[in-house]
Length: 224
Ligand SMILES: *[C@@H]1O[C@H](CO)[C@@H](O)[C@H](O)[C@H]1NC(C)=O
Ligand SMILES: *[C@@H]1O[C@H](CO)[C@@H](O)[C@H](O)[C@H]1NC(C)=O
Ligand SMILES: *[C@@H]1O[C@H](CO)[C@@H](O)[C@H](O)[C@H]1NC(C)=O
Ligand SMILES: *[C@@H]1O[C@H](CO)[C@@H](O)[C@H](O)[C@H]1NC(C)=O
Ligand SMILES: *[C@@H]1O[C@H](CO)[C@@H](O)[C@H](O)[C@H]1NC(C)=O
Image (cartoon, rainbow, N blue to C red; front, side, top):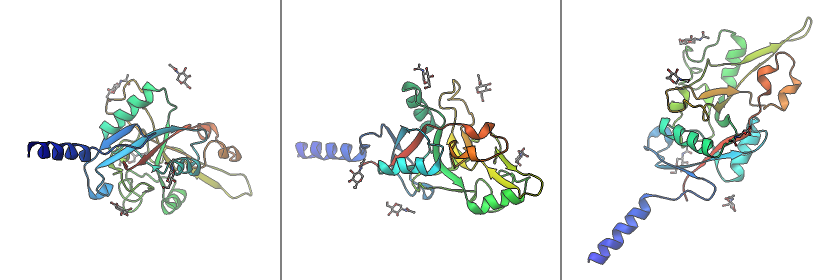
């Protein structure tokens, strides 16, 4: 009987902590809620690869390792990711899940005063300004810790007799994982152009902010 109980408790201990697959060093226990599709465990990898500012390249890298684009769900997860990034001197910033919906981009292009934090209705940051790939992460933390305005970079090119072409930094990135102040209540969420640094060379206009290279991405999956 005692041996049986011992066996049972060993089973329980093992079933209580599922293992993350090889290549996913960060394991998070989450509070299951409707906003994270009742996810109890989540595994994250910070994958370095060039051209991760391009959203479809970043998405493809995660799919190659059977994962999805992801993001930290709370401050504790952010700090664990920051420690991991600092210990291995990984490239920052990191591409993370989330991009403006096409409908809200139309709103921004029509309205130069668009402010995602003040916006009423669909295009408010806490409503449906962003689309996400990952259903297993509650985006509330990321959407409450922007480093600047929403949008934070936009522009257009124009010339007499030509149409005006607009662009806006439309994909989420994670900042400050190497900040000496990373445990303080700092902004961690920024925006970069979903087309990536290589493609924005074709834009004319102010190129300074457009050319930032992003060489790492956060990928997530369930434990095995
Ligand atoms: C939520 O997770 C369940 C598995 O636990 C899955 O069947 C379902 O498709 C997920 N929901 C969404 C919206 O992906
Ligand atoms: C991804 O999943 C497929 C199908 O289950 C499997 O064949 C493949 O080895 C997996 N790849 C990785 C990198 O885990
Ligand atoms: C960390 O990486 C950066 C960029 O690749 C490099 O310039 C720096 O020397 C590295 N620092 C250490 C301590 O390896
Ligand atoms: C956007 O709205 C927020 C909240 O109303 C305000 O604090 C912020 O200053 C506004 N940003 C700009 C650039 O006007
Ligand atoms: C660290 O963060 C705190 C709280 O936000 C702020 O008051 C302080 O100035 C920051 N220090 C540095 C060196 O950035």
